[in-house]
Length: 478
Image (tube, rainbow, N blue to C red):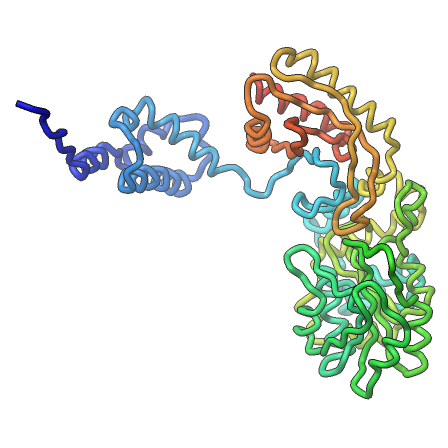
């Protein structure tokens, strides 16, 4: 009789049958009502999650995914539904353990705040405050005055102002001093930082016109002189904190630029980006200009971040000549960019720690991690190694290796901090699978993969996080 044609499968009929097997939302809620793991979830949220879970199965069926009728039976469906609901209920903004070795990690919250600062934030949020109330006069006060004195004392500037980030600081200074006018910048300083933030773009938004001078690698004073005109409103110097041009290079010094500015009555601005109040070269890092040194060179206005090398909350700090800062304070844009009480409280706390350099290095986590000797990091790594070899023998090969940490946050790009890491080479799963699994822990662990091993750099892991890291790996392999 010959070969019979293959039996025709009615896909639409099968899909209709699968869709019919999907449970109703109200029936699911009745079954889940007494589940202890879900009892703290508000009814509306629980209902939305159940609906979302069922909808996801409906879409898979309609898209032809390989789903069998037994997949929709209660004993298989509801455990998956509960896991789905619990995953959706997890807090989105979460603590992580940073094992990358990048101290100021832009994607992991940047600088960690010290305990004193966290106490100040609790008071700022949990109690009323004198945010804009002058305790001396009993009248309305200015929030900026609460940190201005500290900024001036630490930097040597005549006045100071704080906005919500350094990009905002650059924007408001340019808009105040050079709107409708020209700003001269060395071509080698037209930087781009994270999030495609570019100096030319910010300048355009401020209403100022960019005038590039010099070459990428070499700019001379006569380049600035040749570009001067009646339209020149500002001489801008941008510190290249996130990259370096090396080799045949030439830059105009602050003192030279300040001299040119004074000669032609044109203000000079420097955007330090990741500004620092202490010299970090004693730890083997390249010498970076401190805010105090830039102010002392005669620059009229300086901008820098509060949450990078300073080690504080996200903020844009502006310091400089009083008459310039006063103009910026009066700019209507200032209200749109102003800091809230948490930033203000956190920044004041950090600045107070800087009054004594020894205290700053002992308490500000960013400075602590930068200055920690490698032998201390080594002890921390070996402590973790002992725990892992004791409890996870046969699951992975563990070792302590030399590695390199980075400052991060767009600062000191080519600078290496010698460090020590625990290297994990799993025996029964792929290293990518291990890395992904650790990111899914209740407290996610973020490491880095090198040479088919997962590395945990202990420079960015606190002493009290070592047991947490150990437990995360135990849960993962168990």
